[in-house]
Image (cartoon, rainbow, N blue to C red; front, side):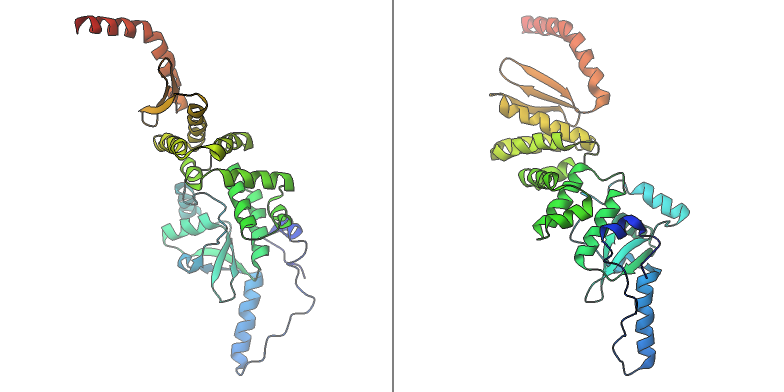
Length: 309
């Protein structure tokens, strides 16, 4: 009898029938107490078919994180669960030692923990490979997993020794792109990726541009990028990525230095004869036009001040 319900056909297809149950249930080992045997049989049956309430404190995180920061923008989810309850159960797997590990639904675990309530979960007996595929399939059905988060997820799977075919079944990404994504993650220091964040909406080309810089960058050049990102933590994640790419221009143009005129808002790339101002936030771009219009008056003011000195 195949499992049905909350897991859907996409997961079943990805697993290629690995979750199909045998025609006959495997007998449980004989126990001295019939009551104990019935209790264990009931627990196994509940694991397979039912959802249950589990304390978030009893749930272990998977080593294969699919988000840069699972707690980011959690307030809306917390408020939704507060008002309407947890609508979709999470998936847990039972480890060999009896502990529970999250397969997917980490944000729901964090939200329920913040609310001080138990989380609704389905518990299944799964291998780590099966759990990875289930986690990846659920990610593919989400609209908010970014390119770099998927690339990090893929890299962690490969680094753990799993083959490309497992990555493909989990993510639907073909072999060529799998190894391009891994190459990007391997080139960019992880602290820079984390400082930038998920950068929703940014694609492979932008991250490849940053990776190409990082492959040949000297430590001082990488520090310049880190400083540029650090000065813009109040900006959105896509804006921080654009700023990091802008910071790499200072390497290509000899003698240029990058500085933050207004931290998180206005960046200057300067040489002896040239200065380029960039607005980190879209809402500050009109200021650059205003400044351009004010240059004649500012020049006159500077000349008058110089004459007085």
